[in-house]
Image 1 (cartoon, one colour):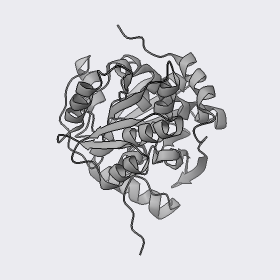
Image 2 (cartoon, helix red, strand yellow; image 1 turned 135 degrees about the vertical axis):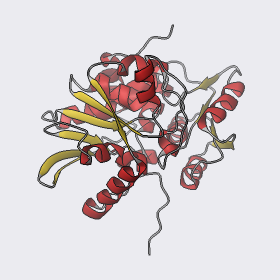
Image 3 (tube, one colour; image 1 turned 60 degrees about the horizontal axis):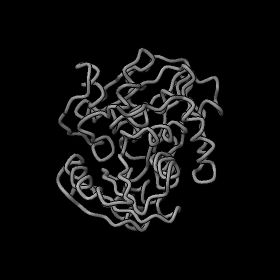
Image 4 (cartoon, helix red, strand yellow; image 1 turned 90 degrees about the vertical axis):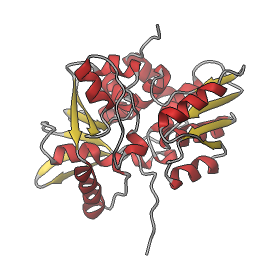
Length: 301
């Protein structure tokens, strides 16, 4: 049985990652007179929090001859960026539906990009099939203890910079970011937000175990896991975690608000936590919302 990470693993990852990742800033602000904090993690190298888990995993244990992974896009960007910095060849499998911006970024970071299948699960199966070669490390996008610990460092920064925050809200795909946040939250309530039609965690909590779900959301490229990770579920199945669902329309409205009012450009997944708060589903005095990524195509007129 695999060992789940604990809070001490996040603390160790926080020290390990300092030379390699950005300590992203917070924005204290208010909307309609209500205070909130935004964690600008979309400013992270590679455009999302995924770099944290990738670097931590590749620095933990012996250096592999190459790394193979599967991704809807952001994890692949994180792995490609981490592998390039550490001098490790990388191969990234993605579904054919991967957004062009994410595919281009993976290749620009020096990784070999292979499109396979229509969903993340199919790309992952293909990646696993070639990851048996000696010296190869298969790096799961979210169901990996080192990855979870690395993702938790984003919340460790929040706690250090804004100890008065009383809740952390994050978007959920496979559960790596949310479970890392739970480990690092210092007892604060974690709100795990998913699209209504992309709800791997919500369905797992209802069933009492990870189950397969169908995926159909504007945020599917980032939150398109068809099944929450086993390690993540073990951490997230807790009274300190609240599962929240939002509609695609609510996500897009929150994304548009972030641009209109704050000139922050994020991908739909990053707006999901704020969408839940705007809809009144996150009861907290001073919540912090992790803007987890900004890997979208943007055109300037």
